[in-house]
Amino acid sequence: TPGTYYATVTCYGPTGNESLPSNEISFVVAPATAPIKIGEQNILTIADSNNGNLLIAQSSTLSQTATVTSLSFYVRTTGGQLRLGIYSATGPNGGPGTKLAETPEITPVLGWNTVNVVSGVTLQPGTYWLAYHPSSNALGFWRGTSAPSCRYYSRTYGVLPTTFSTTPTSYSSHWSLYATLQP
Image (cartoon, rainbow, N blue to C red; front, top):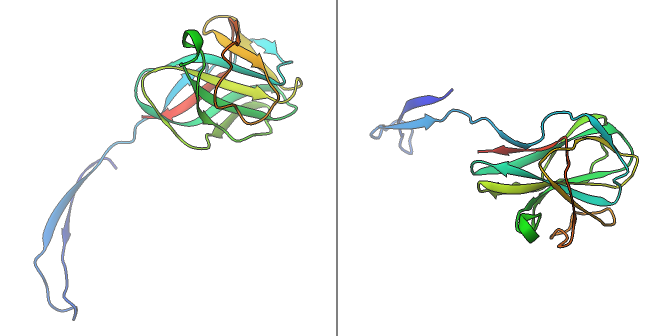
């Protein structure tokens, strides 16, 4: 429970019967901080599929320093494998640049799929790109047609590349995809 606590420490000598001076220490237990979520947490309304072997990223904004712990993606129809990741906004025109975090490969199930990142990374406030990479056209999702914008390019399915393409296609759409971070 959050609060300030005091403890008395008594030390005993080697024979166990000699008492040495006691010391009092205090410590504070801080309240747990709620996780931050960036990206699209709603289940959107436009059915989408046929994105196999495309690496697609949508922009998102983080308002405070936090460490990414997981990524979540809503799946409408199953088939194939999926990888999720986060890229910096260091690409051309503020687009996706360097990979910062990635999940292991998953076999998605219907509904929300939440996957821990391989290694948590602390992000500063700013713009980031949440990415997904499906292996099959059969994998279906939900998307919306309003901002944030997305960038995508064709590539063979596999581990997410260290750097996003410098010549991606731009599109005005986003998916039910978000990241969870711990402040």
